[in-house]
Amino acid sequence: MTELETKMQEGLEAIKKQVSEFEKSAGENTAKQIKDAIDQKMADLQKQIEDGLKASDNSQEVKDSLEKMQDHLDKLDIKLQKSGASKGIVKTMDEEVKAKFEEKAVQDAIAELKNNRASSVPFEVKAPTTMVLGSYTGNALTTEIDRVISAAPNRMPLFRNIVNVSTIRGNKVTWVNKEAQEGTAGMTAEGAKKSQISWTYTEESADVKKITAFVKVSKEALDDLDFLRSEINTDLREAIEIKLDEQISDGDGVGQNLKGILQYAPSFTVTGTSFATAVFNANRLDVLRTAVALVKKNRFNPNYIVISPMDAALMDLEKGTDGHYILPPFVTADGQRIAGTLVIENEAIEEGSFLVGDFTKSNLRIREEININLGYENDDFTKNLVTILAEMRAVHYIKKHHIPAFLQGTFAAAITAINKPETV
Image (cartoon, rainbow, N blue to C red; front, side):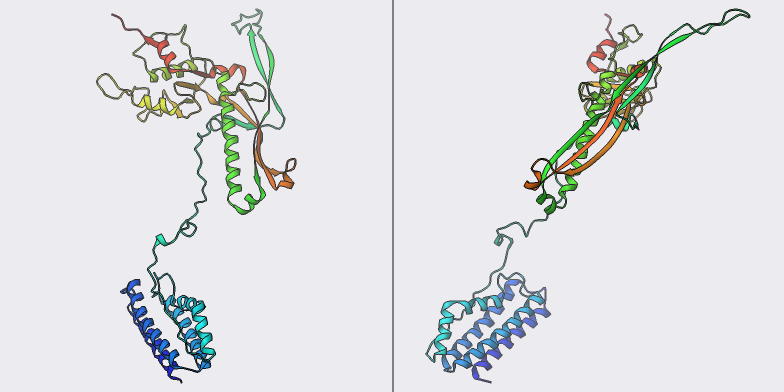
C-alpha cells in the first residue's frame, strides 16, 4: 500500500468511526453537530490528500487512489443516509465530492498530474447547511390533494319525498272526475216512488314533460382526473332533482313546464267563516292553526305545513309583552307540530309565505327516472369532447276535487284577516 493510500485509508476510517458514534447516540445529535464533526474529519482528509498529491509523481498511483477514495465515500454516504445521520443536510458528502471532481479546475489539475507535471488539486468540500422549509420554493411536494370539489350548497329537494309518487308507462296520464250530483237519497214509504239520483263524469289529463341538463368536457379531463366524472354525474343529478322539485312546487304548467302545487292551491281566506277578525293579537302560529282548520273543513286531513326557515325561527322567537316565550297549547314543545300537522322548513316556500295541505293528493308520476348518458355531438369527436347528459320524464297533477286539500298564503295578509281589532 502506498503512503498516499495509507493516509486516505486512515482518514476514511476516522470518518467511519465518527459515523458509528452518531448511530449509537441517535437522537442526541442535531444536524448541525453532525455537520460540524464530519466537516472537521473531511478537512483533515482533504489536507492529507493535497499533501500526498504534491509529493507524488506517479499519475497512475494518483488515479487509482482517487478511485478507491471515491468508492469508500460512496459506501460511507449510503451508510450515513440509512442511519439518518445526514438528515437536515442539504447536500450529502458523496454529492459534494462528486461535484468537486466535476469542476474544471480539479479536472485540469489531475490532467497535469497525469502528464507528470507539478500541480495541486483545489479539493475543498463546502460546509453543508441545515435545510428548512423556506429553502423549497415550489408547492407540489408540500401539498395534499383534497378530491372533494367545493361548491355552493343547493337547497334540499323536498316535494318528491312528501307527495304521492308512482310510475307510468305512457306519455300522458288521464283521470275521471265525478261531477255535480242531481237528487239525493231519501226516506221512502212502502209502495211510494223511490228517490232517484244521477251525476256526470268528466275527463282530465296531464302530459309527461322532460327535464334535462348536460355538460361538455374533454376526454383528457375524464381520463386524467379520475374523480371528475363522478363529480359531474352527481352535479347533473342534483340539478335535475332541484328542477323537478321547483316544478312540483310552483311550475306554471305553460309549455314544457309541469303544473305545480302552488298553481293549484287556493289562497288563504276566512271570509264567511268564524275566523274573520276573531283572533286577538294574532300571530304566525295563529295563522297556521287557522289554515289547518280550513283544510279540515274542506274534508281533508292536512299532513304537512311548509314554511321558510326564517319564518320558523321567527315563530320560535315569539314572546309575550313580559318577555316570556309563547308556546300555544296546540303546538308541541319542540315546535315541530301545529294541531298535529308536521312543520317542514324549506326554501322552496318564500319567506313570509306558507303552504298547508294533504300532500297525498299531490300526484307525481315518473315515466323515466334520472339517467345519465355519454355521447358525441356535431364535431365533438374530432375535438375530443364528450357530452354528458342527464334527463328524466315525469308529470305532476292534482285532481279537480282534491284542490281544496291545499291552502297557501302570506303571513302578513292572513294575520290581518284573522286579527281582532282592539276595542276602546
